Image 1 (cartoon, rainbow, N blue to C red):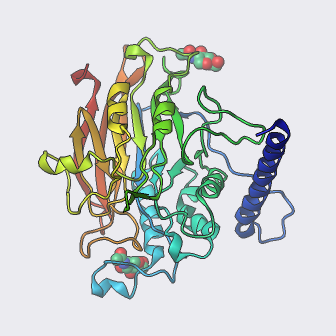
Image 2 (cartoon, helix red, strand yellow):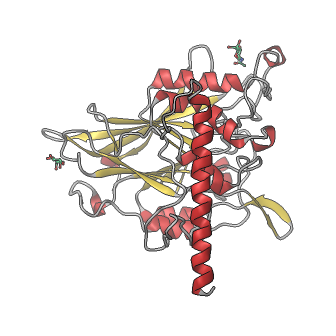
Length: 401
Ligand SMILES: *[C@@H]1O[C@H](CO)[C@@H](O)[C@H](O)[C@H]1NC(C)=O
Ligand SMILES: *[C@@H]1O[C@H](CO)[C@@H](O)[C@H](O)[C@H]1NC(C)=O
């Protein structure tokens, strides 16, 4: 590309983004300023950085596969026939509101297929409804894409851009600075596959020795959509460029922490489509249920190998296979499904929709909270009592090394 064309291209990209931002702001404001208020609506932003509470905990709610359509008229799938007539997307909304109230998480991670593209003509409207309870809660949240989000009026880049502009969202389109990615004037990054690859850093408890250090990384990855490989329908999965970026992630260089071996705090990863090794867990001891074949890519890009070599990734949280809700261990790393959350998503009649909770706990130092000591998880079912099941420890610093 000659310099002129390149410059031109950049300008075109900038313009595209500006229009997108304006369109997103307009769509978001449409519902919220009906009273003719002239104020320009800006995104309500989360308090950053994210940090542990002063009780030494940080709790994450994982929501997998909401499959949101357009709301009240979108019917439920795979519920008991006695439940069918009074069931819609609003039950998904209600479940999200209830679980937020019950668990009061510090952060919400949506692991894709947030909306079911083919059930909505307007992706923006669908996203606004799907994430509505998260935005109203004021709790910081982040999302990645699944393989169905883009089957409506927005492509993957537009979806991630829109989601990054929603209230209290800390979602990002892609990393904005990095050795491997180039940032152009319009904020468009190149050289990394997919949209929605980013790292959210969680800082230590307020007032503690670790207050100014990032002590937990949350990696979000775009596991892509559908693909064809040697004539077979398959999934894209995580690609090499994304793994290369991931390996370059380090602790904030300004705040190296003596408490963390190799200066790398523990990390959790979130994405939609399981990696190709997950079927092996059929033969291993798992916590939870393995009820359907794993729908994973045919091509192995080496994600497991990368996670193992990084050493800091302690657990991975996925979605995609709604009736699998187990955690299983591969080479020392836990891989956990969220279990299907949404009522318009396929499921199993009589097997309640569910959500996963992840809680990180800090080590108590002499006079202050230190780095992360333990990571636990459990699930809650969408029944009358939001029953808690399958609690387990995923990582304990005292038992590792
Ligand atoms: C869906 O929500 C309605 C209204 O709150 C409720 O009556 C119904 O039992 C719910 N259905 C399911 C399957 O949870
Ligand atoms: C963290 O930064 C704040 C503001 O710069 C400072 O007042 C505080 O002493 C720092 N805490 C630690 C443990 O370094």
